[in-house]
Amino acid sequence: MAEKKETSKSTRSSSGVGLNKFSFWCIGAMAILYLVATILSFCGISVKVVSALQGVATAIAICIVAILAWKYVRYKQAVWKVLYIVLLLVVVLGIILPLVF
Image 1 (cartoon, rainbow, N blue to C red):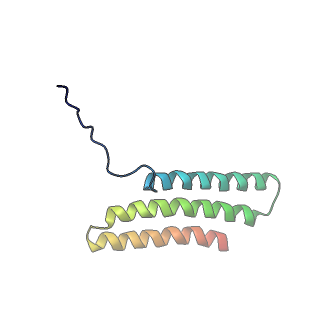
Image 2 (image 1 turned 135 degrees about the vertical axis):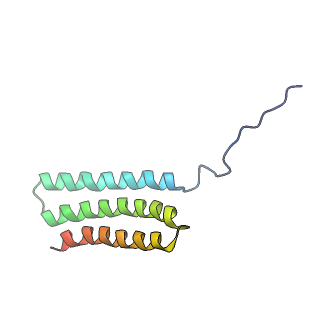
Image 3 (image 1 turned 180 degrees about the vertical axis):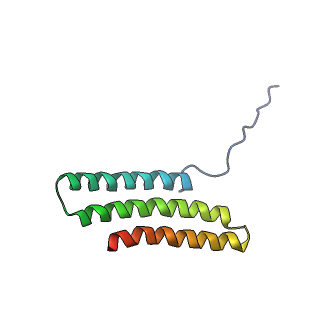
């Protein structure tokens, strides 16, 4: 008799919202924001509006990276968590300060 070999399948459903799917749609949202910002800059719209749209797109990317970075440092020593927070604050300030000034 022929035996059926079970293939090793993941127990996670592909219809759920996973990190990969979330990342894909965030990249899509970022692309749209950058495209709109580029079109507005070609039309001569205010530089503040264009830079704000680019800032939002950059913030989306940083959120994705911050989530992945936290998964890396979550179970590490406290010094890694402190370094993570310091780096994240520097990045956030790097986004906000140019928009303000």
